[in-house]
Image (cartoon, rainbow, N blue to C red; front, side):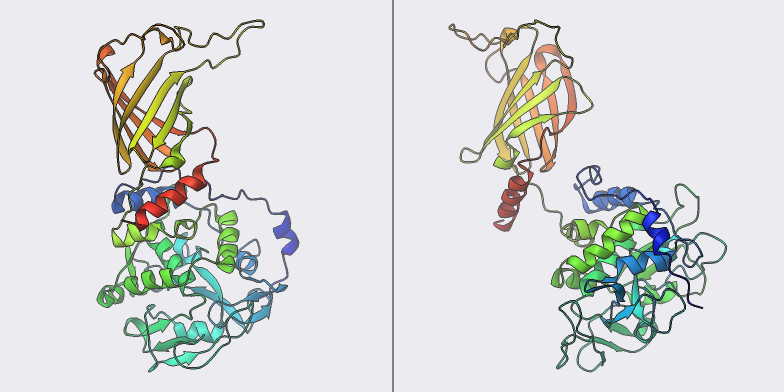
Amino acid sequence: MIRPVVLVALLSFVFSSVRADSEYYATVDKSTPQAMRDSLHQIIDDHTRFPYTSSTTDTWDVLEIADEDQDNSNNIITIYRNATYMKLHGGNDFYNREHTWPKSYGFPDNGVSLNYPYTDMHHLFLSDIDYNFNRSNKPYDQCGSVCLGYPTRPNNDRGGVDGAYPGDSNWTEGAYTDGRWETWKGRRGDVARAMMYMDVRYAGGTHGITGSSEPNLILTDDRNLMNQSVTGVNEAVGYMGLLSVLLQWHKEDPVDLIETRHHETVASFQGNRNPFIDHPEWAECVFESNCPKFHINAGLNDAWYNPGTDGQGFFITVFPDLGVISLAWFTYDTALPPDGAQANLGDPGHRWITALGPINGNQAVMNIDITSGGVFDTQSEVDHTEPTGADGTITLTFEDCNSGLVAYDIKSINRQGSVAIQRVANDNIALCEALNAESQATE
């Protein structure tokens, strides 16, 4: 039976959207592939579940917004055929819901317990019923001209060009884990990033809020492992692939407007995001163990601070031609002075530490120079507590263009510790990212 339209309910449905800003991904640890995987899992874990089919807002309702036809808001676009159909909701004869990670590989039972991967819309897409049937639960793999072609239709300025392999068609042969399904070139990156999301989102254990069991989903090239996942019941571990092919498709078909629309819609309902859409470059670190190191560059020239430590500020200046970086660490007032108070630059009550050192990738070990009394504008030679650079070190480390760590060892006061810093303003982030990309390209 076709369900009634619930657009009015959806328009009045209030849910907090999760934006892809620096705050959402602030805790990502990029030091190693495992560290990045674990930290991303913690960020995207424990999302809000919507029922698969319900009289209330369910996956049908959300997907018909997420997969809306860009040329006709009354229609949807299917993932494999690229066909457009009027929005008819559940029970229609044209389209249904495709699990890009087939539910038979680890989580087929959506009965009494809350089955989170079964209804996770970051890997659900609207699909033609016959194309979904023919894809079945075959792994994603390159197929070739010996396979049977499933053509696309021309919509949204793509698809519909037939001809020799691969053309704009999907291709398939075989069945189950011995079979393969090659998604057409316009959506192969979409399914690849959906599968990578599932691998990182589901790491076993239980949902942190509801306590429901969740499988550990793992991408692999081993079809024997995939076959072990098909048991007809929910399993602790589920395998799917082919990982190597999905990584290739991820690179061949970059994120586009249609994929972004699906992603943003799902994120606004579920409350979590797909990091490989927001940061496609992270796939190489998580799945290929190639984590590019950040390179200190002139885009870091800025004022920095630690939000958790009032009164601590930093000026950072990079000298690329000299291969050195300088840091000025200062204290500042955190409350307004009384009326009539006069500013006194260089007041002895304010402390400054300056440091300078050579750049080595994303880090610099800097010698400390403390100026006595905090006095800078003086006609006499400035005294130092000890010979320049003899009062300890500061190790300055950057993981990206908006987060750093100041680790200090100050001998004269026997003080050691570290301060996490971020920019006061974000104006130079784009320059920093561009300069970092240039440095990695020349390695």
